[in-house]
Structures are given as structure tokens and as C-alpha cells.
Image 1 (cartoon, rainbow, N blue to C red):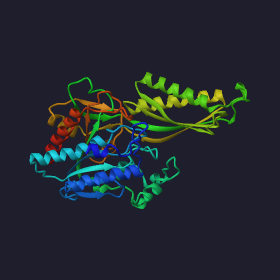
Image 2: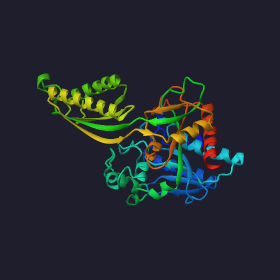
Image 3: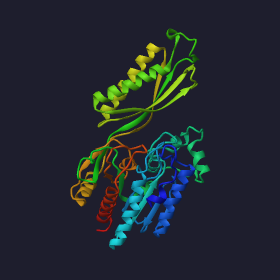
Image 4: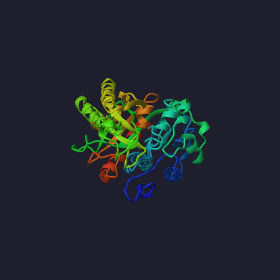
Length: 395
């Protein structure tokens, strides 16, 4: 499975992945998922929001145990973030069948669409729509850098954008959702444990900072006459690092656009996107507020107008304690650890009991071609997921 999936959407220059929602690479990943479903004689289904499902048992019976993750990527992302969870789900199902396990509840594997938000700027679109955390109107307003809206992209890919929306009946049929994921950090790296259980997801969000200055000639405009938004932006990036470090939080400007984007031109507009995360919502709000104040104060000195727009926000997610503790018990008391990364499991947690398993990442690197995990650890993840699925669905 891993060998067949690995080439899809891979950039030969960077060795990273560009599997963006509703693109050709995404379509190839979806075909791979469908083929895995059919090979195993499972019931294949695509829901109203484009999420793919592979069912063992009656999809309408209720109290289903669901696992899976996503197959899309960030720009030049790694091979494991998302796909490891989907591949491991099929492998865990194979393991259960090899054991002769007999599920007493329906089992399903899911591939949630557009989890990374690389194309339209909002993460977890598929699970947000399904759970009602993203309205149809908001979804229709999403637009990518290529100018296409989400509905247009879906339609070009052969899906009906008019069908999207909340799917409470589907969620009501799920008794538990368990997502396996590579650990995005090093909490397990220095332990003897290849697998851990998630305790919570830090609150996090994305904010767009617009720095409006004045375009002018780089070679003829005196320093004192300039209204250069790039200066304000650069100072804000440094301020974000400082404010986050002091508060024990995280703040990253990882995306920027510049107009007119000429080497010999002072910019008229710089847009920077801030990703910020913290252990609690109060700290997160304080850090983002301080970053905004630093931007505005510097903008006043530079003659630059600063405007901040919150594009997304996910509150703190405490995974269902009884399910979390049950997973830890089934796996012999493996470590329980928090994460700063968002996941579909976090979005769904308000609607169904959810839990997560993490597979050890020796470097802690993620969202990068350098992301990796040892084969033995990946197989340990499959074995752990199989134990969990058997414990939840077969007894």
C-alpha cells in the first residue's frame, strides 16, 4: 500500500508532496482509497462533503467504530502526515481478519477531504462541514490562490458543491472515532514507547495581517519618505516570536504575499498569515493580542495601516476521557500526551467520542519532506490500532 501511494503528488525537485484538495493528485489518492476498499470487499461510499468511507458491516446499524485520517498535504509536506493513518487503518483491518476477529459493531475507514487547508486556507474542511462547524455559506466563499472557489474546484473534480453541508445522521451512527497519526513532535522520541495516546489538542487559529503602505521606486525614494509595509511586517514577525516565547506559546508567520512584488519597488501591500497555538485559550488570545498591538504600533511609526482578520479558530479539545483511558489500558498504559497540531479527530470531538494514537517520530519534524518514522514503529502503530479496534468493535 505504501509503495503504491508514495509517488502520488510528489514533487521531484523538493521530494515533498503537493496533494491539494480537488486536484489531480487528490483524485489519484481517492482512486487509491477506492481500490483498497474494493480489494477487501468493503462497502464504498462518498458522503455529501466528498469524504470517502470504507465499511465492514452495515453502515446504517449505528454505534460504528471508525478510524482513518486524510490523504491531502501541506505544500511540500511529508509522506506520513495523514497517509500513515489511512494506510495503517487498512492494515489494522487486515490484521483483525487474519486473527479471525468477529466485529459485533460496524467498522469503517474514512479519508476526510481537505484536512490541511493548503488550497483554500481553512483546515479540516471535510470534517468541519460534516459536523456543522463550517456553514455552507462560509464554504462557498472559500477561494484559492488560483482564483477558483471551493464550489468551482469541487465541480471540476466531479463532485456536487450544492450537496455539501452538515451530516448529523451520519455522525449519530458513529460510536467512536480513533485517528492514528505520526507524532508531530518529539515526546516519544526519547522513550521506549513507539506509540502514545493523545490527551488534548491545544487551541489554535489563523489570522491574516494586512500591512498597507505606499508603492514607490526603490532607487529614488528617500528612506524618510517611505511608507514601507515590509518593515512593519518584518518587525511583526520578530514580535510574534518574542511574545510567544515569553508566554510558552507558539506563533508562526509561514505564508506571505507581496504587492506589486517587484525587486526594485517598495511594496504597497504585504499580507502575512499568522498561525498561533497555546495550551489554553486565554494565553492564545493574549499572545495574538500582543502581536497585533506590536504590529499597529510599528505601523504608526512606518506610516503603514495594519488590519487583522481572524480566518479560523479551533478551541481547546479534550478528548473523551473514558475513551482515552480505555485506549491507554488496551495498550498496556502507553504514554498520554498533548499536541499542538489540529486534526479531524479534534473537529469531530464535539459530535462523537474521539481519540488519537501517535506513532513515534525520531526527529519530530513534520510538514516537511524530512518527516519520517521507522518501519518497526509504523508496524507497532498498526498492531496498536488493531488492538484498539478489536477492543472497541469485537467485544
